[in-house]
Length: 196
Image 1 (cartoon, rainbow, N blue to C red):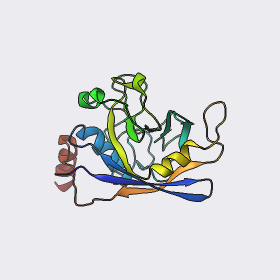
Image 2 (image 1 turned 120 degrees about the horizontal axis):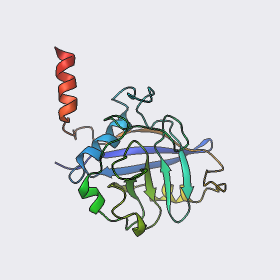
Image 3 (image 1 turned 90 degrees about the vertical axis):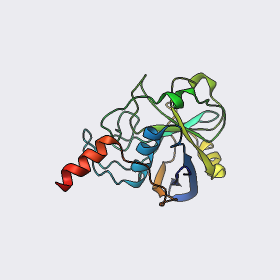
Image 4 (image 1 turned 45 degrees about the vertical axis):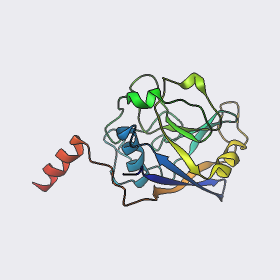
């Protein structure tokens, strides 16, 4: 089975900048890939702790550092202090993803506040960042739209790395809907309970 591909349509200011197409490495980090995919589709409804839609649509990239990365995924507070995973507030690191290197532009990696604190926030590298190896779970890569990523990198920012113009995900979803990620045991139990 091939890995799923999702899209993130990027708006900068009031104009559509284009689309990032991202392969999610379900073959290496299935739990992290499932989390990102299901927040792209919004299919999981509202978060258990934030009580806001678990969806990247409309979510900003709140932090952009040229030569390093763009960080987004905080759909609840929109400033880097919020968000949550489909599994609850946080979930554990997948060891195969920690073993992957931050060695190229376009890699997707989970933002965290220490070990086993993955939520919904993620970053996309503009360049290699070996100092992050072993500390953040790498879970995919941009396979189309690197020119959009370059445009994001060129945005002016303030002293806190906040973009001077809004950079946000205007729409997102799955490009390969035929690719289905297996349900976790938790999701199977929830479906069984709902059907009973």
